[in-house]
Image 1 (tube, chains in turn brown, cyan):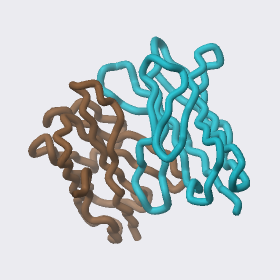
Image 2 (image 1 turned 180 degrees about the vertical axis):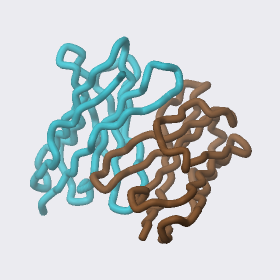
Image 3 (image 1 turned 30 degrees about the horizontal axis):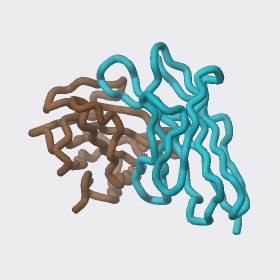
Image 4 (image 1 turned 90 degrees about the horizontal axis):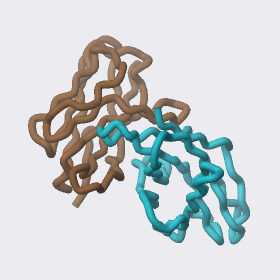
Length: 114
Length: 114
């Protein structure tokens, strides 16, 4: 059983399109995250939800909109895709309320905008 | 803000030799420190963490890390490197703002030479 699963694994799309990436965790964790890994492998947090409530909203373009329908799911919708959005996007989860601060990561979604 | 620094870009080591990957941290208060490993085209995997207690922390795959408060370091070590240890290693520190944000270092590519 995959603990944190993301779909799709690969996404190739044209500039200007709108796309979504889905994430689900079956660990019962209360907090989920989106990180962006650029071509130099730098990891930067984008968003975090705790029990469906947005708690971290970094400086990202408002073309990026996260949605958490329940605490096991965190989706990322991107409008009007640009070349610079090409990256690997990682979803992660953690159980903050019990002090398990480490993250469990998904395997990533490689987004290529052409 | 909390941060970590990984001063080297790449670490080359011969198989069977000791492996060290360096990390220094900058925090206000007590640090919560983590090491993750990323294999090609995979998500990050948790190796070990330091929250409190023993300065020597043992983790997965034979890795350990030593917390050194006076040197503000948390170096990752393995006594005898394997070719399969070739990967990207990230040090991370937990933000103390209560939102469980992890700030990652830039990553170190480890190459174990047969």
